[in-house]
Image (cartoon, rainbow, N blue to C red; front, side, top):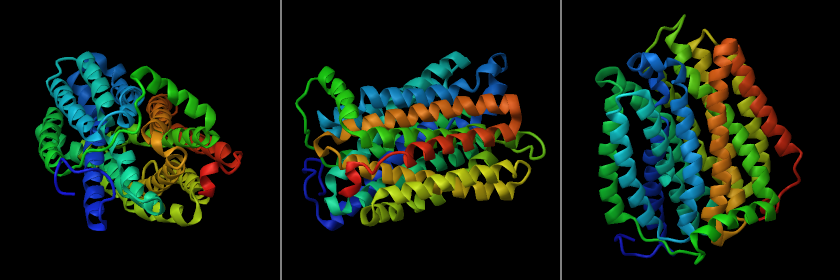
Length: 401
């Protein structure tokens, strides 16, 4: 599987490993773009002081854009070659990043951030591509491998953005991302195979079919709400961390907030392991355990508002919990309807990122109204919602597969 003209079917074990690593890189580099702005909020406030009250809109609209891109673009992976879609969206992403990096007002930055979110759904072509390439017995592990790249992109994006902003300014973050995407495009052209479309539906019918999939599969509805609640909790924490660290007693800049991404990378390292356990034991028990970890993390955060060590421990627990639940949820939904993986993934991820956008907004509101304790309580309530939804559901059809 060494040329761009090869088929995406039945790769050898060695080729599969290489392709999964490439897909993991694509997912991580793409999705990082929707998280670069989180450690930069204080920098945005200083650059656009007249719009300080609206700074929180930047991460919120970016995640809403991702949900919109999932709805409108990700289903096309069932209809067209995913490799072509990845390259097309990458080109659009570079243009959006250029606009963000040269923004002269907060309004322009917000609009560019919305476009960045829409186009960053490149990552959601990579994950179902991995499920297509892998044999059923290794699907969880394959998804976990690519998702580990995605989570590393989410977490290390903050580290990279904080470092670059500290020494070169926040605008340089967006320019650096353009360079990374252009370099990755060269590898995609030379190494990534074409995928084989599995649907001939027109665009309107392709979108409408997602509603029918949601109605038909209770397991998809349950996984979507659980995932959305957990990602809301995740976003509540990460969207306000830089604000906590900028104030007393820390007085730390964006680089410090970004360094927490390295700590959270432990969750990405747990992803393939979570996938293997999901393949062997079924996903429900893994999800139950993961929800418990997320709840425990917010208890730790609540008593660690003035402790770097406590925050570090909480980040590790939070990210392992969120990642383990994500892998297990996706293993469930990909087994529902193999010929509609992009659309099933779209339903799940639209809900997931609506939850993330809601979490960013809730985090900002809780911070301004109740401080760090309010943020911790809000995250705990989201974990409680996930637990209620998960524990009140019956084992879905995918859990028996």
